[in-house]
Image (cartoon, rainbow, N blue to C red; front, side, top):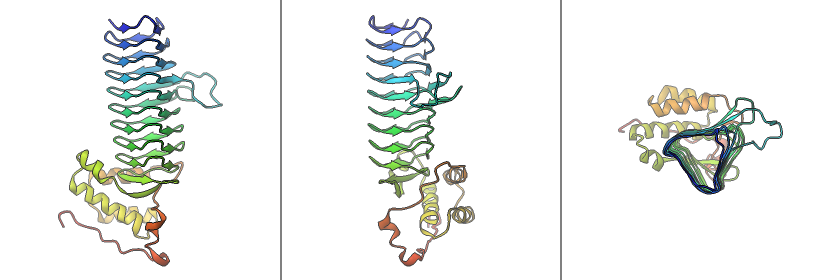
Length: 283
C-alpha cells in the first residue's frame, strides 16, 4: 500500500503503485499515474495527464504536468511522461505539451537539478545531467548523456546531441552537435567533450574518428555538406561517427552550431583554411 501523508491531496482516481511515498502538502491530480518505488517529497504538484515511472525521486516544490506557457493552448489533452530512476530536484517545472495528444518526455536515469524549467513538448533522453536553473524552451530535444551547465538557456526547437556539454550561462540558439563542448553568448564550439566520452566508455578509436570529423567541419574551410562528404570518404566508420553524421544530416529548425569562438577563427588568416591532417587509428 502506498504511504501518503495525511495532508497530501491525492485525487482518488489517480493511479498510485503500492509502495509509492507521497509527502506532506503534495497535490496529485486525477489523471496522474505513479510507478512503484517512486518517492514524492513535500509540496510537489503533479497535474494533468502525467505518467511517472518507477524508482524516481521528486523533491519539494517541483511542479509537473501543469498547462504549458503557450498562449495558443486551450486545455487540450496533452501529456507528460517520465521514465525510471530519475532525480528531479527542488522547484523544477515540467509542463505538458501544448498541442492535442502532444508529449513532453523525460527518459531514464536523469538528474535534473533545482529550478530547472522543462517547457512544453521537450524530449529528453537518458543519463542526462541538467544543472541548476537551466531553461529549456518549447520543443527542445536533448539526446542521451548530454551535460547542461548551470543557468544556460536553450532556444525553442534546438537539438542537443549525445554527450554534448553546454557551459554555464551559455546562450544556445542553434543545434549542438554530439560530443561537442559549447559555451558563450551566443554559444560557440570550444572543442570535444573528451573527458565525458572517456567516462562513458567511448573507445580511443572512436574518439580519434570524431576528432578527425571535427577537424574537417571546423578547420578545413569546407562548407558543411562538403565536410560531411569528406568525412564519409576519409574517416573510420564507427558508431559514434555514424551518429554524428545522422545528427548533422537531419532537418534542423535553427541551424547547427559549427562556428568556433573568434579567437580561434582568427588563426585562419585572410580566409585561408588551415591544413587538416586526418589521423589514422594507432598512428
